Image 1 (tube, rainbow, N blue to C red):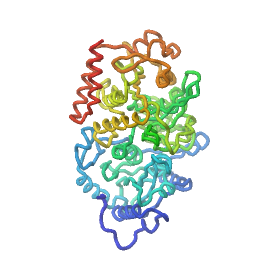
Image 2 (image 1 turned 180 degrees about the vertical axis):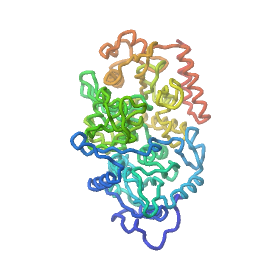
Image 3 (image 1 turned 120 degrees about the vertical axis):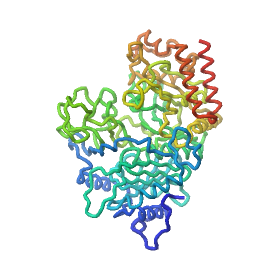
Image 4 (image 1 turned 45 degrees about the horizontal axis):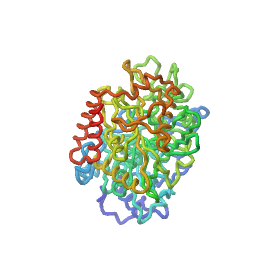
Length: 616
């Protein structure tokens, strides 16, 4: 039963009277119920057109929500400054409302659906008074593609409408795909800031009370109080990962927090690679890799989310369900990610970055030289002597993926791309080697299930403390995490039976020496490890076995060409028996926290690792 499930009034509301011709009656009825309950002043059905976007941006400029940037330095681009209390995803206010608590698992906040529906029903009553309700039909994936899924989001935030127009295929074409037999995800959002008659609005309305609630069985997302990022752009983490992980579990495919690459070797063979990295592990840099190894080319298909499903031949194919990039600005610069900087030259909405005096943007890490004066993300004067950062650490850019100069010509192929390799990678100062390959699919699932990173200064908790982040999905899995692992095992087994599942690898760019210096240069030099992985798939290198699977044999990677001497290279693969025993003990405790649902194959992976360590 839907949250808003009251009888319809006899009189037709504006929602029904103004809907586009051909809109499915199920959508019209849902919108009408919401309009009757949230009482907006107006209901607008979005068509996703350029004039619509221009009109919304013009209105937000007039309202003070957006500030235009210099039309020559950054044409078509704007800066938004959020409420300082609304700057990031709010994991503590994010809920999985499955019918059974055990289906949410120990890593999610669970509230019974009936209780959450009652809460949201009260919060949404009159929540859009004085505002416009926007209705946004959208496609996750190329419109009409076999892997594509559809949704409809309502919102009272024009900022969210513009963001959804960038991040999804939003508008009339998506609406036309939703018929009587089409399943679609219901996404309801309000900033929770109704306006009394004559009351002046603020540039960034929001509410201190926040809920981001997911109903896996009924395919619904309800968000209240925030206008920021994944809290409000519900197609992103909410639909594309939390709800999609439940849909995929039911339908036999995988929703993954993974970037997608196309890599072509010097012999002209192209591979498609999916890679999962937790935060602060170089995900965006890898998605836009500029290889230093001659003859290799790398193209971008996606920077954040991939859906993997069996194709007609049974092999796993992947799509990037998004149409844009919603990237973290700080740390992105010419020296770290020139491709990203070239993507951001025009038609970008920046949020919570600083502005230069000549009408451009700036954030920490963008340039080596720090400007003498800026307007910071709060709209205040800022100089290098200021005690606070100029840009918020979670400041963002929203830009169309098609603007990326390394975007692959098959990035939006409706059929998806065949996945040749899957990579897991964390930030580890010790223990984990630069690159290794799983022995088989089940061992690869063990790698993904026990994936870990050491906390950085920007993360909650003690710096250096190990944080397990299975499949880089810890905040984003809408089902019990151990059920997610079992689902990976089942999907892989079917792909193997159909002719071959992707090879699975693990990488670690962040190993350090005794003085705390990184042993591996990273960035473009990561192509050396990537080339070894793809050469393994072609059978061109053999590798040697170890506790982490198969690692490069001597001479299989020219580490000197990457600027790494013999001693550093040996350290990148060094094995310390005591440290590895502690590593295995930590992984065992982590798996035990999931109880009896942990698949036997995952526990077998740990047992094999222990045996290999004991044999050292």
